[in-house]
Image (cartoon, rainbow, N blue to C red):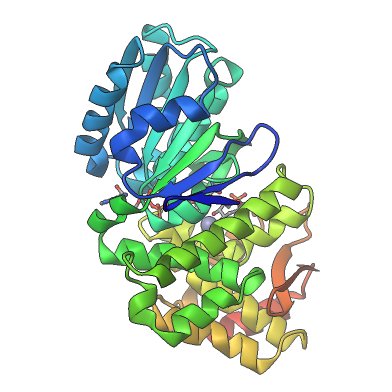
Length: 365
Ligand SMILES: NC(=O)c1ccc[n+]([C@@H]2O[C@H](COP(=O)([O-])OP(=O)(O)OC[C@H]3O[C@@H](n4cnc5c(N)ncnc54)[C@H](O)[C@@H]3O)[C@@H](O)[C@H]2O)c1
Ligand SMILES: O=C(O)C(=O)C[C@@H](O)[C@H](O)[C@H](O)COP(=O)(O)O
Ligand SMILES: [Zn+2]
């Protein structure tokens, strides 16, 4: 990690470009982007969410000074973007504009935009360069980093996708000024996840002063963001294609993804993951792995952020059926990321269904 005049650069490894964190970076993207992209780019497609239309138009104007052709593709909001029809719409733009392998995609938006934009870049001509410009907390600390790209299907979350390392990630903290508070708080669920699996300092910061921790203008907030990015960077550096270690980033996601599916993708990802983390904390507690203190801390920290920690009792059978399709499952064997202690994640294989049900009873409303 290097820091210069308020800009922090975190290197990942191999084909994965740097994560650059700072202020005012989008206003100077015409200078930042060429440092991340390989030489020879002539055309750029900016894939953006509707809420980022005016920022994207300003970026298009800037980049048009440097690149031969810069196009905009506005895609639907939130999870509505993570559909194959949206990818097809962008493939058509790329095809009609004759994008070649030396051209590039830039995404501007939250995790839904970076996921589908990354997928479009991964699949166009079997892979072109992509730079992500995440505009939500969640995308800054998690979705834009690490190269997991994908779309949803009716059967589940992110069931189609690929690993495609971005050429770079530009985290401009100024863009959070426009982010609705509920989105900011939902994104912090992934920051809390990083706290429980690897960086307990994050939990201390939230517990000490939740107001400062949730204010993007404070040093505490930036510290938490950098700690969470550091966790993601370290894990991805070691296990880009999720052969083992990377599964820890899925803490809380087995139930979380099932809730998103049950809610027809209308819920915030972070809110669903918050409930999923309390569920696996209860699972670990009931199986005698995790202390009451650490399990209870999940609820306390998430409640300080106003995030949900329970879900209706009657939904268990539906959720269980969806969880069986989780990517960590191996055949009929379900697998969950659990904690043995703070910052000690491990995998629980094939837990008894009665244990899963008992853990669900602990979060049932
Ligand atoms: N690939 C990964 O490793 C990874 C990691 C975590 C999450 N994800 C995925 O990320 C998605 C969730 O991402 P998200 O929480 O960022 O949601 P999102 O992309 O749906 O964005 C949330 C909302 O905020 C709006 N928005 C974004 N930036 C804004 C800004 N600066 N100002 C105002 N409005 C803004 C968006 O248009 C949207 O309505 C999920 O699909 C999840 O599966 C992927
Ligand atoms: O980067 C990872 O690996 C993660 O698991 C990060 C998660 O926060 C993220 O939601 C990811 O998209 C989930 O991946 P999936 O493989 O379970 O779809
Ligand atoms: Zn996630």
